[in-house]
Image 1 (tube, rainbow, N blue to C red):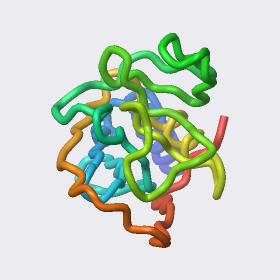
Image 2: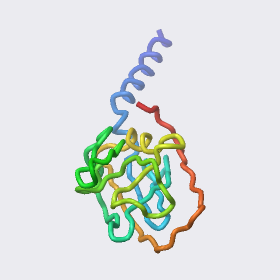
Image 3: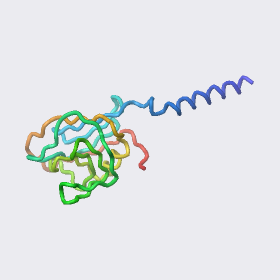
Image 4: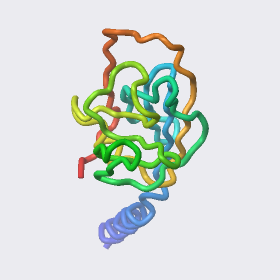
Length: 164
């Protein structure tokens, strides 16, 4: 009898955890640093992902500020740049997106969007699957101007999530 009560109590605790699951998760946030050309994703204060990015080049700078993730599109096509494909797109602000791209140099090279790599484990897909609409996104820093050629930057997945 005592064992049954203990199992029932454990079952109720597990059920409560399952029902409260997302509410108990640490809040997501994203920081994009234009100085470093790096995106970092956090759950609470814990870094769970970082990836090199390429932000907007001179004359097409990515805006700095505080934003929230908007709509997500598995495949979006640019209305401004010849219907260019933008896989794993997340709206940041108006016509500015975080999206996958085949070329992500270590310096600003886009028309204002934030490019994430499609190779090397596909960080763009990882980020797309992780981020939720409404997630705060801070874009900070300012690119100093020179192109650091040959600098290798690594993608880091601190805590992997299943890819959908």
